[in-house]
Amino acid sequence: MFEDLTRKLDGVLKKIKGQGKLSEKNIADSLREVRQILLEADVNYKVAKEFIKAVQEKAVGQEVLKSITPGQQIVKIIYDELTHLLGQSAANLRFANIPPTIFMVTGLQGSGKTTFVGKLALYLRGQKHSPLMVAGDTYRPAAVDQLKTIGKQLGIPVFSEEGKNPVQITQNSVQFARQNGQDVVIFDTAGRLHIDEKMMEELAEIKAKTKPHNIFFVADGMTGQDAVKAATEYQKWLDYDGVVLTKMDGDARGGAALSIKAVTGKPIVFVGVGEKFNALELFFPDRMASRILGMGDVVSLVEKAQLAADEEESRRMEEAIRKKRLTFDDFLGQLRQIKKMGPLEQIIGMIPGLGASPLGKVNVDEKALIRVEAIIQSMTKEERRNPRLLNGSRKRRIAKGSGTTVQDVNRLISQFNEMQKIMKRFSKGGKRSLRGLMGGNIPF
Image 1: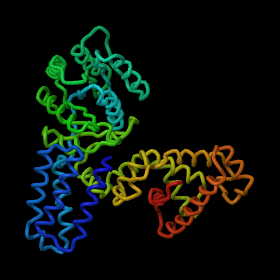
Image 2: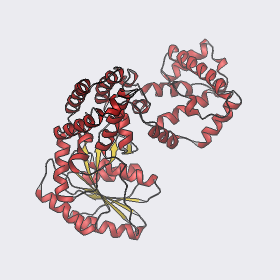
Image 3: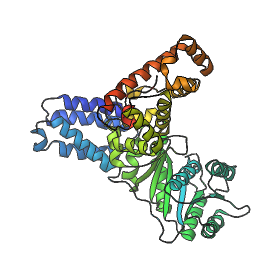
Image 4: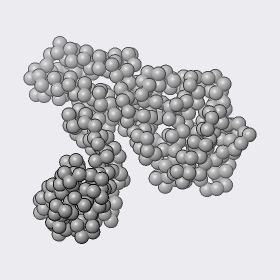
């Protein structure tokens, strides 16, 4: 997410921090570079101009220029202004006092609207709600079937009606939810390839008849200023509550995220960070600003680790640490918890200092984790418990059974031995979670 933007900004910020003394001139020169980087990232011209103006006004103050670390002060100013630009604070979802709570999802065709409906339903179910997805797009071929497929995959009910128009379908779905105990209703509405007045009138009628508690505009984060223009048009018709940016795991330049709040006045609520249905994150402006500036996002990383953590597995690992006896089963269990946290490239981007580093630009081979699982699963129970049994013939058998090479098996054993050494050091300090133990020991 924002890899190119982060890398370029990191280069400028290093120059600023590296100068022993700052003047109005070299500050202006550096900020001119920052403005060019923002424009290359497809940030709205007026937004970029106002951003640089705000930073410059604060950066040339005497308390900055005369401070012991003026470079650090300016980076802090850029961080604060970036947070302000992105929305200052996280948006809150509104829930009805008397269920059901209604979410209305809108956006242009191809923006990832229907997929987001599934992601939102899964997210809300994880928050102990009982969601109902509503197939309100009766125009796009197979749109209803797509939502039903998503519903079946996630185990979440879908409401649809043949021969009814979207206004009738959405109204009837709310009554259905009341009768069947669903406390959340999510409308998937029709989109077009461009703004269509008839479609917008229909959306406005759905809003008037059902009175949604939350209306979201879904924008493709890879389309930059086109997404901002569409968001502005939808705003005129619907006065929606917030924006969802999808496909932010791709090569999105960041222009939409950095412009949309300033242009529309509406906050970014969620970002889609992958194809899987659990790849949805609440948007926190301060955390995103930290990521963009290459400072990482430790809070989100910890939250992901907590969600992925298996309490029984953690207790078993703590016991292994106390007894200084690590097995390949422990190794495999922790590897699976790391995989639950999401793509490794995203995790690396959340670690302070790595986002703009060479490691942050490396394409992590997710298949390597699959190879590790295959190798361990090709071992006998006794071999997993006692790795000292792994002689040459056993290694050849394991390599053949896992579809890997003996070199791969040897590499894993070497990493396992390193992990045991770390574990012995950790055991001297008492209880430690495996998340700390695994730091830096990513297989292959």
